[in-house]
Length: 231
Image (cartoon, rainbow, N blue to C red):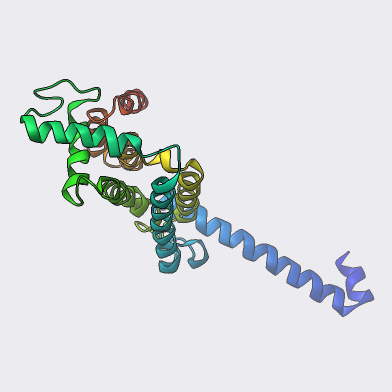
């Protein structure tokens, strides 16, 4: 076949040469990414997360939280009713009676659930507790978002983690205000952070999942699954 190309036309040889170079380049890029993944080295620049891409994810997450707060402020279904009514009532009762829900008085959630409610009231006011709640949830969501889109931006798995970060942002926007208007909105970032740390920092991961279980029970199932996999 090569001989026929030599006889037929020099252009055929040139086309075959550049085709082989293109294939070799793609194979070299994939091999470099795989090598970086295995050895923990830096991935090719095209496989890394740029600073602009990291900033864009955080800006998008902030915009989503602002939009959800605005949407909840006027919608007739009152998606923040738990925050503006139930949680606020518990805090007012604790202030007036001196009895802390979950400690001195019954509480439907584990004892640490009152902590994010207090923080929401602390950074805002009883009348604006929804604003404080969204701020608390956003700050907590920034922790796993940092692990996904900022930390180890040059690793081989960077692009995969960036796609995961964008999926989370879009999913939260589609979920609507109810996605951040419940106590579960506090435990979700704790669980995601715990899972992201599980491979190299098992004790820190277990600690975060334990704290999450003391806020809402469901992270205990994730903790049990993590222990089973580790064994």
